[in-house]
Length: 153
Image 1 (cartoon, rainbow, N blue to C red):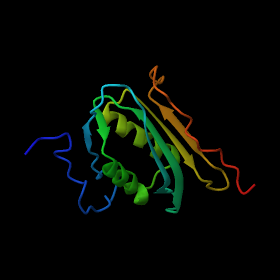
Image 2 (image 1 turned 180 degrees about the vertical axis):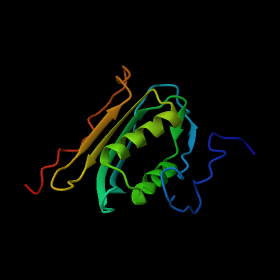
Image 3 (image 1 turned 90 degrees about the vertical axis):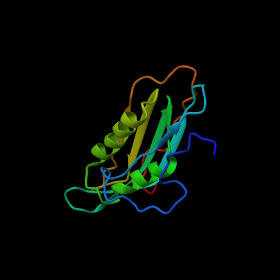
Image 4 (image 1 turned 120 degrees about the vertical axis):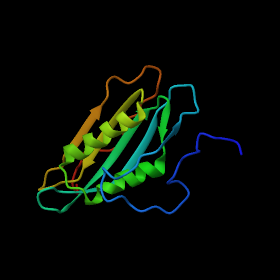
């Protein structure tokens, strides 16, 4: 059988259980088959975590942009990782930055940014942004496309 860059993936193509916590979630990666710089975007418009003080659910629209280096994140493992925050209590800032830092450590991308567009808690929306540095030249980096929170009007 011919060896491919997908050998070794354990979560793709089979039944999986949502991890109990972000620490238990297993991210997977595959070799980047391209030799040109390009940007990858993941949008998670229904991200959920818990308030660490009240246990009430918090909701966000996350946008993760990265320019791959040697590795690509396997999307099902990312979905399960993000889903593992459903029962995780942390403030918006901590969730957003923790996700970005784990991806940077795991993938070693050329560049990564995250936008955490959190829905109001106590009447105040909280947006959290972080990136690893200046975007690489020659790569198209579009706006994240999430409008600022405007309530009902």
